[in-house]
Length: 190
Ligand SMILES: Cc1cc2nc3c(=O)[nH]c(=O)nc-3n(C[C@H](O)[C@H](O)[C@H](O)COP(=O)(O)O)c2cc1C
Image 1 (cartoon, rainbow, N blue to C red):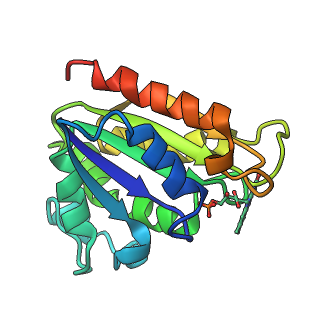
Image 2 (cartoon, rainbow, N blue to C red):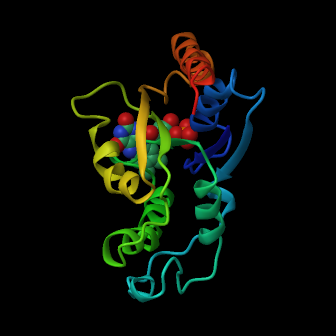
């Protein structure tokens, strides 16, 4: 199975990277894993120019976006790992999501979806503060239309709070839950 891991943190080796690694613990053998770290990608802000409304599957901006979409397109499972920023995904991730307007226009305006095959998605989110009501709700609100764009079903949502006090690497329950969740997916037939 081809697995793509999208890392949306603004810090490269902190909780988000750690959660992804624990989740992958039992998935590394026998699967092809590709990391897309948004920190290392040049992805410009959507210009809202509507170019992709008349140019099927293409953006007027020439940067790393089309190759990341290609990576997603070739994946069976996509793992989205993001910190919580102001009750939503990070700004880098939001910029990335906006650029999937190429996919939105192909599917809903030009009536020919680029992502024809179903994808499976796992979402992992870290929040620095201790639990508060609604803490993680914004992430799924933000991602809902993005899932439509990439034709994906969510098969897991793993959320960890208080990461500013207890990092994931020091949170045994989180590490175990992530590793077990990954192991279960390793047994699934895609
Ligand atoms: C700009 C910014 C906004 C944040 N907003 C929230 C928030 O709304 N709720 C929360 O619980 N933590 C918030 N945090 C804390 C991060 O979610 C936390 O530090 C997380 O572990 C960051 O992921 P990382 O360790 O991979 O960098 C925020 C942090 C930053 C820098």
